[in-house]
Image (cartoon, rainbow, N blue to C red):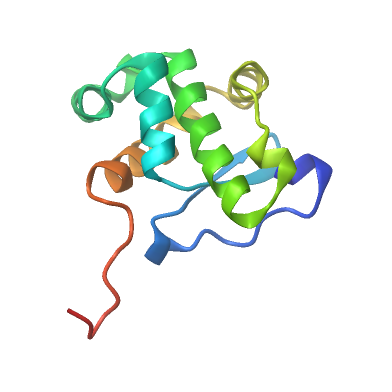
Length: 129
């Protein structure tokens, strides 16, 4: 993954909807794309329902749900930036990294990712319609 096999990614580009997450001393960037959302929904169900549940009670998000969201966001970022480590991230490895870092460390980045995903990702550039 990016933080392990190559240089760590630069800061997340908020205008592109990217979200940074630090796990076990490694920085990863999540990118909300159509493909990432489709992959998330095929594995754990509707993104809107997951976001709604997380907003109501963040501690209700399960470890596997957090891992799937982070993995698919990493894969999307890795594909865009041709980072094979992130593009080939695996749910099981990410799940272990979340557990080792402490599950609460993953909740807020996942919620930010979901917010970006359900609102279309990119933020408008100031001064542009």
